[in-house]
Structure formats: C-alpha cells, structure tokens
Amino acid sequence: MAELAGQGPVANHGATSIVDTSAYNKLGTRATDVDGNEYVYVDFQEAMLPGEWAVFNGNTFAASQTVATSLGFVGVVAATVSASDRFGWVQVRGYHASAAISSGSSVGPLAVHTTAMGALVSAGATGLVGVFGVSIVSAPDTCASTNISFTDAAGAPVYLNYPFISGAIVQATS
Image 1: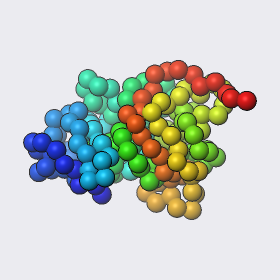
Image 2: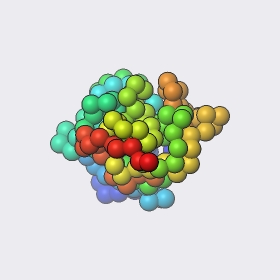
Image 3: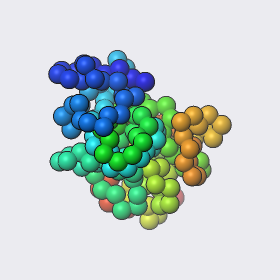
Image 4: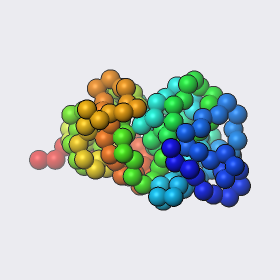
C-alpha cells in the first residue's frame, strides 16, 4: 500500500489501498507516493483487481478494463474494486512490481491483450493495438503472481510514463 502526498483532501484520505463508495477526492486528482510514483483518482465502472490495467478518459475519469477497442489514458489499478461506481487510484507513472501481463510476454513495449481483459501483452506481433508509455522491466513470473488472478496473465514489473492507447497498430519487428 502506498501512502500519497498532495494538497487538499489527498492528505486526509490518500492510501492507494482504499476504494470508496463516494468520491472523497476530485476525480482526476493526481498524487505521488514517497517513491515518486504518480496516481490518478478515478471512477471505476466495474470490479477490478490490483495490477489490472484500466483505461480512462481525461474528462470524466471513468475507468474500465482494457479491451481490444480501448482508447485513452491507462493506469494500473492500485486496490481491489468490488463493483462499479467505486472511486480509487490508478498508477500512471513510476515502477509497479506486479502488473497483469500475458505470461508469454518478454521485456519491451506492450500492446492491448486481445482476449484477457485488463491485461497487456508483448508488442511483438503485427495487428495488436500498442500501449505507449509503458515497458516491461523483466519477464512475467507465474510463480510470484500475488494479487493477480487473470486468465493467461501473470504479475510482471513495469515502468510507467503516463501510458495511453491511441488505437495505433503495432508492427512486428524482424
């Protein structure tokens, strides 16, 4: 659990492990933890698990699982979200130790997983929609996938730099 620092209500209600039924912070609020990781406060549209990838827009900050047709800003869910209409944090910058990545992925750029909602995959094949601003630090470890219970996904360390999905298709490298 990261404790957040920032101005206003974040200091009073700013643990990333807290998911609320009412918005205690203004949607879109940004805060950092002691390690310099950055988070955005969003309105979750469905149940999600820590480590899953959420896509959200910069207007309403409504967050949902990434799917093949997703467009917008992307972050890693910080805490368990039990249902829709919950409010909490997604990480958008810095190091995350266990994000949902397809178990066959390798170090490098990422793309939206075509079948596992809320997970990403290596961007090594043609025809996948790229996720820009995020990279796998080391290959997923299926044995050390705490907090991850996704189909065809494991926990992997990633570095985030304000990731987003623009709809651009990744081209295979040879």
